[in-house]
Image (cartoon, rainbow, N blue to C red; front, side, top):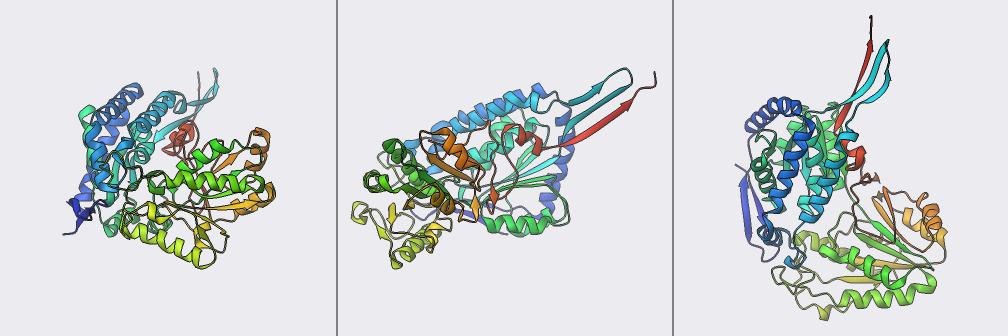
Length: 460
């Protein structure tokens, strides 16, 4: 029997382990879920909303226990608390728009005809969630899927092995039927087998490009709708009229918070030439003031990366860039906790270019390259010189200029004077190798349901 093991980045010890379920047991779970979903969908929408919101509150009541558990599993410092604020914001927003988002579209209601489009739940939604923000990324799909009348099977990353259990326990305690929301531990082969046999009615995956390709291959020919959020290499562009201090503080936080392990974190920055030297100086000072250490220590501001192999990828990118002429500005001596393993000092690189992997390939770690640019056209060319497209962060006092540039950026979201934030009223989506589909907003509900048309001709 395969056993999944969560290796804590704090000390390399096994923090939690769980056996995977067999194919037969997984199929039995799905059968129970499919039967329970029919009854769940019959319940009034207002009732489903209330139960889901109660589940969110129950989850939030777990408080400090969750925060410490996350620090052990993926290394985020306890000083930053948990994810409940974001979880509640997103779930509450989706609950608030559910009635209008799921309401029938009536095209005619006359003595002769009744014509309308209704939204029906897909059935069983399979959520494959990542480890970096394990609660917030999962809730993006879990809450609206349940509200819309679906059953949900949740599979979490091995790195955050206990999150799915906690989420399901909280929602079941709040009144969601236990077969409507189930946590599952699967190996890759069983997951692929279930997907390839059309066992799910919708699949949402947040993770690597390779993982997304594997899911698409497994689902080929089943016509199962899939939502994917995959890699990212999000750019920031600081224009000549930007508020420099605000830009430095926000972009550096977006680049280095959570050890750079953020889906929409900033991984490359382009700065207008007149501001470049000052921006770099202030950014270096910002990064140099971080404290790398044990995430259970409340003084720690940057913890270990979630896994040693992730840190190895970042170190390799830094070494590659520096071998090609890049310069690291953050003194490693300021970070004695850097152990060559999961604990990795932050780094800012200049004299970089797009021949270097660190400016093209996803880093997902505490490193950012900064380049000067002559004008908007050069910045736009560099921002689009990337195979990913999740978000872009533009810094200017001219909203028209930002919108003009934003229309030309190949990305899912354009920010102005903001970065690394998910607004639940807007569709969370990407393009190119970042994936396809959309979560949250009214579009999130539409993706988690299917349209069904009614054309009723009256005879009397």
